[in-house]
Image (cartoon, rainbow, N blue to C red; front, side):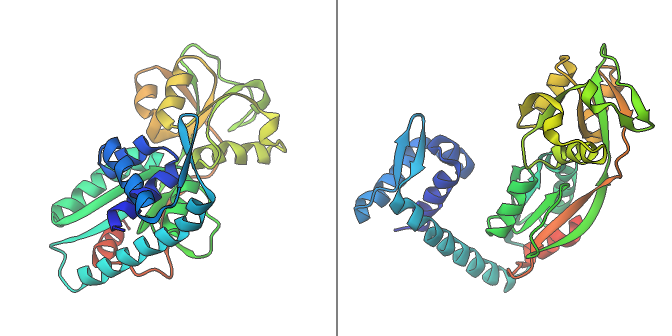
Length: 291
């Protein structure tokens, strides 16, 4: 059993797809399949069942997954301790970030960090707020950056910036009437939204709650897994959305979208770290740089 085999197994188990896991690990699909096959053959265990075009963990695989994660976490901790014995000419830091932050806030800051510490490798994972929280909790990421609510007390939180949500519709669409400034008639609109767990979607949920409405009271016409997909759908006339001003600034400036401020406070960009996990010198330097 090798660490590479364990990494492949965990990646496949988490994504339930060999090709996606291979892409995330920077290897070929055939190499990932061979690693799983070698692991199963060596121990006479069947770890996955094929279900349609995807795969599912068997009972044996489900029992093995937490053990494999624990070994990889221990390996990561050992590497982190060794890196602390050297200076910051080498090292590695991993960060998970929500889509808005990863696309519009983080890249320039990581570039600046790399110029200061060119020997440090940075690994970035992108997901929604809930997925980022899970990545930090499970130790797949040293740090997390989110704009949504995080509930786990094991995570420390530090505000690093703020963002503002706006309501947008296509250039030819009518903006909705308002009951008060920043209070659009939510039921009068068809909505294009992000998936559950997204901090952007939480903004609309909060606005609806302030109006005494549940999310199910709204007319949802499209649920999409990314900010750019939401923006494109709204530009095409599918409906309205509430989204970060960073995502739609260029479309508004070009006249492809119309916007209206909404009565929601600015939302924080928050840096997350697990309180009980050792942070390497590289992770501490990155945390200081981002804060």
